[in-house]
Figure 1 (cartoon, one colour):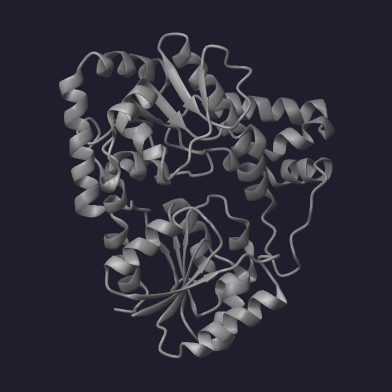
Figure 2: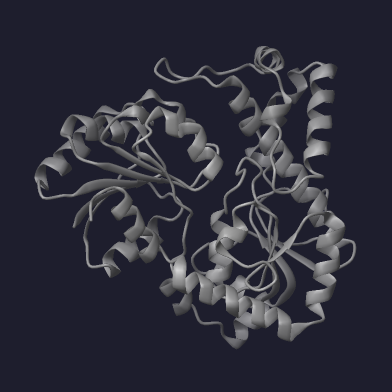
Length: 390
């Protein structure tokens, strides 16, 4: 096939590009940002011309669903495939989701179930994957070991700088803030089930919206107030608090290395190693860590974040919070180790730091499972088949 790939420096793009080329398909890349996810005249002109110049193209592809691309593909009558790696994703509230030319693939089953009624034949659940060959090509030197060897590592944001709730909290009344605090404290005690949206009423969501300086969505968007409040505001705050509390608990008992650009002043025992490049540094950090920690962003309700696939694909031992979809793909205790509370996590850290053979065996088993079932090559083949292109 010939595939037109709309790229804007989003996560996964390089891995998907590598896989498409390995699979023997022809890739035509449009490396151009747009000023709006809905309408950008110059971007549309360039995309339309690219499709018209490649009449033998089988589809247009992007990471995350973008209404601007959907509009062009509908007019040009060419299939538009998108693999959404973000949860939540505002663009899925656009009415353009219903276009018949769309083939939308979502990482989270609950997310797919929520949006599938908008386009029942063309919205699919597809977990993410890993660019295994690229990770395999990364070799760790003696100097790398000196720089990156550690007991426990986490590479990523604390979400403080991404959390919209932190911006508007000062504008909320005490009742609303108290309710949010109670919701977060309750949710942080539960792994594998997100009850935030189920725990707020439509009336309370409207009250929150009225106080939050709400920026309305475009006219052709479905404004799901409860869903937006639960995921984008409370969900991100829940993720921030979970990461801070989890890392603080670990650092009180173990040597914890954190690669992040987030403010860590509230975590005085953490070894803040600064930012980590995801291509050159991150795979080496994974390979040099005895335990690689995964903490899933709370709005990902059932699915597996990209981090799990990257950690396992780089051969790392993974200790992760429980997600209901994980046992569908990996065997807990054999491919990956899961925890269901902070005390449980601390106990498992203590155990696997002192049981190296078991730890290495689990890491190898996880890697083999990725190699067999979860490379981008395999997942893209599945995607093309589900889209009716093969």
